[in-house]
Length: 186
Image (cartoon, rainbow, N blue to C red; front, side):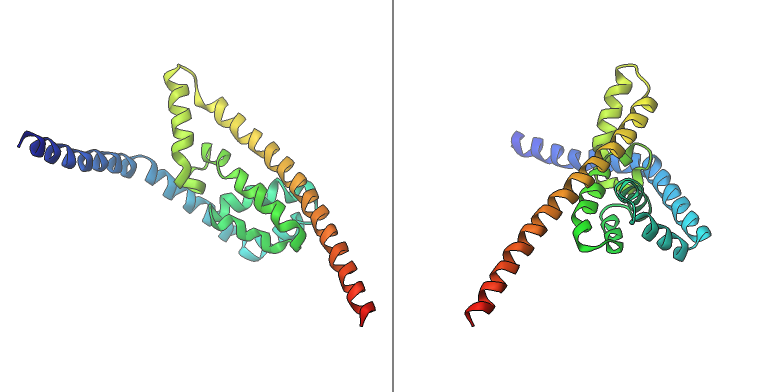
């Protein structure tokens, strides 16, 4: 009987704890996320969606912008997972590298823009909480996290684009050679 009572009280306790966490989100992070998302959408509307798209297409022409500015804007404007759709402005060979850059930036962005990847916010909050408990400010950590993220996405984008080009060239040579052999045997 004691076991059943213990299970009953602790079972409902689990939901009480979940309710307290939910209420802390409602009075804490959720209003911040709504305001940040509203701000981002307002900026896009003020600039104009057409201008925004033209700017993205312009940025896709240059390596450094393609793997820094484009992933940053896509994650901030469209958030995770819609950010990957910015790849539609790129040729097929550059899409894997853009995806690699964008997916690598969804964590560093949470330091300043938690709405962009709210599902993974617990990673940043866990680190930030530990840093604050140690007596340090999280501001410098957030800046370093963000800046290092930009360096990492650029490196990953460049490396992935090279790998993609090497593999695509191999495939073209292989399929070209196979097509040539097939036509000569006919």
